[in-house]
Length: 120
Image 1 (tube, one colour):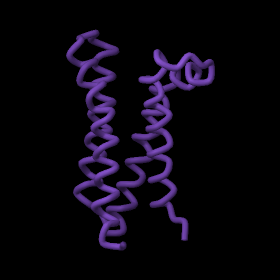
Image 2 (cartoon, helix red, strand yellow):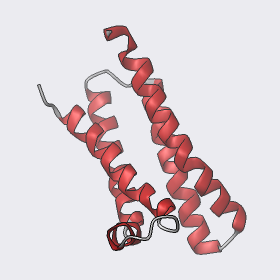
Image 3 (cartoon, one colour):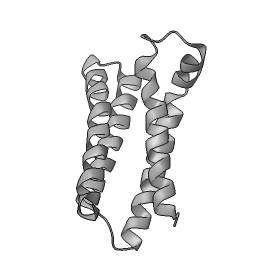
Image 4 (tube, one colour):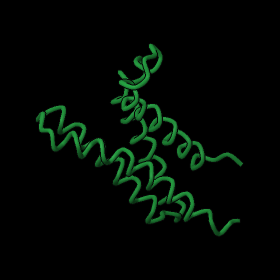
């Protein structure tokens, strides 16, 4: 059965992947990729919004997992470092932003494997 939990989880992954296309735009010369990459901030914000809705639903159902909370923190820190770079133009913030993107993906993958491993 499809629930808000699965819909928001899927939206987090979708918006995060769309936002991460920004990192590929210098390697892939495609007008579609460039158009999506220009909107990577909006996709990142939508992923964060979906993550908060996902977390709220998890808390209301008593199913908040530590791996999900860590994934949310990684998503928030990715956005924070990106915003700080946009405002302050400090190279360290850009490097942190670039490192946290793949880290968030790894946290998300690990949380999926840890949470659903007992079902297989």
